Length: 344
Ligand code: SF4
Image 1 (spheres, rainbow, N blue to C red):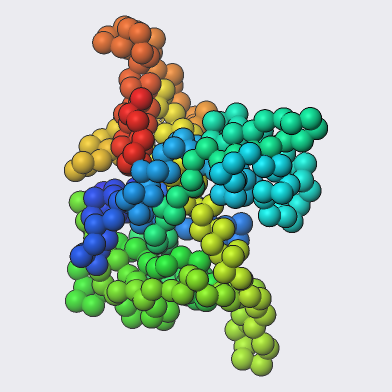
Image 2 (tube, protein in one colour; image 1 turned 30 degrees about the vertical axis):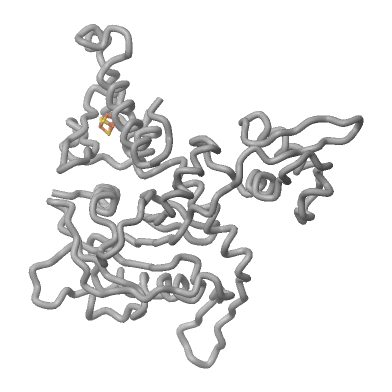
């Protein structure tokens, strides 16, 4: 039984990790992540379809994400030693921030830098690969009643108009009805629909999406009044902005995956458990007898009880108690989802 949007979201992530792509045919390496997007729009589940060789070469840059400032430096670094201002395109912001990024990149070992007199010179250490093939956004709505659908439709229209993701889907709980109710709602026809059985974390395609034009300028709908007398307000999103946002989303997905919830929850609470479902694990709270949300499972939780120290003496004499073990298990699973990285 799935008891919250968060629990539903974890099932969708598990399913995507196992079964993507739902349309069959291809078998790209994928990275699944949660709650990523832009300042204005955050999606529940993100699937990054990757180029196999590119993903493997992305590992040269380490597990941490490269933010847009670091990407500016590593993507444009020259093959041979060059004064940084001659090598890099004008960033559109003060050069002192570029110097900070150069130092940060050199500290992370992903760029060569040296001082020649007063001048900082840089040299490429690795070629930043084209590792992102497609970015797929999934909006999770376990119970899509008519009013939730009315709220969702404008969001999906904005997603389709902007074309930042290659595909946009809605995932909703499967019903036993002959026609899934979501198909009767007025959602954009270009968005796909997945119906998910939360008990088994399996999903079926109820409606196939159309690919969106990610390389074309997008339309950002700022306002869409209900009455037809007033005009909508919108602005254009240029392809370079879209490409840089897609890279930023993919980099964050690469760093976090979808199991990063363990970083903010309390596996060190005696009530925290993980339950196996198929090949994945989901958190479970023994006190609440359900999957706790990250908002509930934190220090302020009134039912929190620290893991008894004695647990740490039973089989975990050195490496911490069960809570530490759970964190390691989830971290190991995250690592395995980033092919090309060392297990260490
Ligand atoms: S009791 Fe609170 S802190 Fe402990 S596992 Fe449950 S939700 Fe998390």
